[in-house]
Image (cartoon, rainbow, N blue to C red):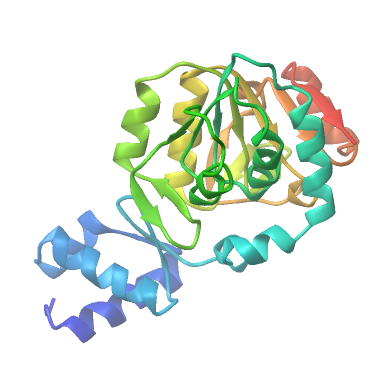
Length: 254
């Protein structure tokens, strides 16, 4: 296949339309170009709004996940505030926690400004900024590749830092919750971070507002049994409650 840049970009868009995702490895082989060339192509398409780059490739942008975080914070803001209030009650001094990059986590972080005895690790740029004024050394920024649309650090370096630690609690989120498939994400990078946190945390606390239930994502991040505590803003449907009870997940709702 030709290695002309415009021809590559057009072919990538056609593959996205067919499959919803592309991989660097497959495209590099198909085009007979280097992986770095493919990554530049994907980055260009991302800047133009045609796709979202993830680890190892790209996926079709989804409006509900790819909005700037400032816009996503306004969606179900009241529900997220309720969840954050309940989650804050689970916090104890002298614990080591991780906050992932979900918008509900940003709401929770505002309760941590006056909690210098809690050791906080996060890959969220907005949470880091929220806590940057705290006169304490208890906030650790977990770096990696900055994903501007998520304002979060993701990728191999992020995973490597997580693997070096054991957290008392990992506060995580998910894009959707399916009654059969569990907690799901749209992007692989987010799913990989959350799976690593499952292995490196004594307790996993899922924060998910009720609008996420009954929808499907692209990646099965957690089975229900992978979560210790679910905090949401309203009682889940009976079929969800049955699955959660079978998995021995504690459920708290406002």
